[in-house]
Length: 354
Image (cartoon, rainbow, N blue to C red; front, side, top):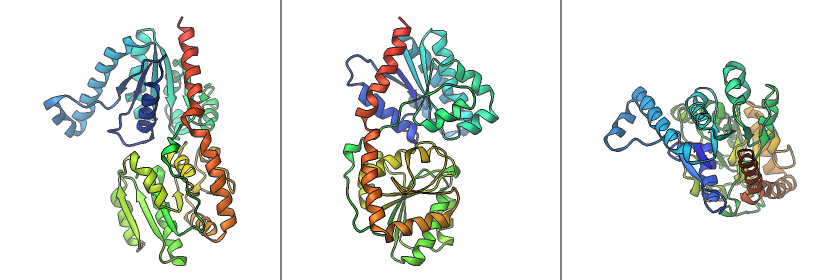
């Protein structure tokens, strides 16, 4: 089985999930697992080309296709990770074309919360998706979105190495907040900053730790200054192995995307005993139940986000109930819970291939 996905050189949940799958499958005696990064590093002096914007795209694309042509013939099943829009054209489309040329079975592992907009605005992508032997998504939300376009998908959830997260009951909760999303416009970290400004009016000593990076970095730092936020620290990009420590140090996770699918950060929060206050974008209501495993508000409503965060601080019974339920919920997203789903799918495809 060959995994085609971003390497960890590229920030994001796709790269993390791909790396975890590769590591777990490498221990399975019945599977030989390979990997082709959609963002390969160029060899030697050619790396200088990756510093030139448009040349970098062309050179990386050529290196990627060359790797696909070399590696795909060696494997029976090609497991291709996918985002949306231009990324869909650049990464999974050539992998599918080459895999079909060699008669290989293919899995589209589609992971973008922007699926509905992608398929509406890029209808040609539907024809490409139909050519895959299986469509797999990490959430029931995306299965429902694909069904709107007469595409049949199945769920195999993301998984988190929950054993690395120290569960801690926070009693009482402190006004110590964490935001852990990349600085992309659709993750709307600005909403968290505005909510925190309101929280600080009631809790002047409240603290906010912001982990992440991306194109919105300077805009967000400017907004924090305009809001005169105190006790707010921008950590930049945090390595995955540091996330358990970061979660353990916080008391409440704030999450405010306008578009989303199944963020790993919420599952990590469950495992750490970190209660969640989030907007209800995309697939989030499929994994967070309001007033059961977290608190949800409408997307873009920073006042409601602040209000629900304060509610958690002021209602220890509700907070305790949510923390306990979140711990139980995290057990759905362990490797043990998803391992057989993947193995059954691979066996099924291998059987079809004879």
